[in-house]
Length: 171
Image 1: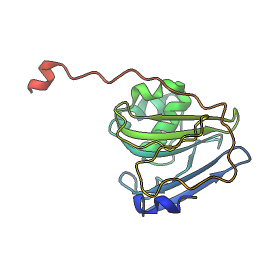
Image 2 (image 1 turned 30 degrees about the horizontal axis):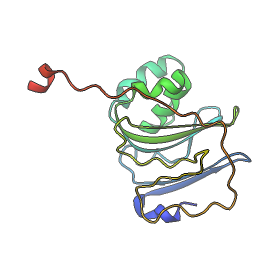
Image 3 (image 1 turned 90 degrees about the vertical axis):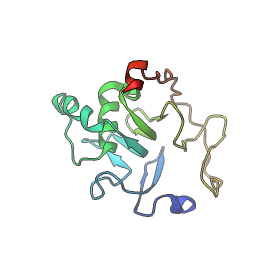
């Protein structure tokens, strides 16, 4: 499933599959090299995430999520996104600072949530109800012999990032 993007992530690969979804991942390890294997599951195995990018403020978000009862298994920014989604739902992206694209599969509701950073720096690999695919990588996607529509994909309209204030820019 991920052989066409092997060149983008030589450090690790992983797969998740159930009767309704398949997630595949290739990784270039930057944060928590040993503990950041993906797809990653939450504590009870009901949510799975694949993530590309870096969340610069993941360590700042972690204490509030731990206080809310989330249990971390590693130090990766990937796990922080997963717990933030469990805690805040789609609004979790409003708290993330960094370059990212991710997909979270909720196996209980059979819902796929996809998001990317506001500036669109990371490529997003998600199925679309209109059967279009995007990739910043060559070669492009291989045809999927088991295509189906995805009526539960939630589009996300996030507000644009605000520019820094002139006082902050001057320093």
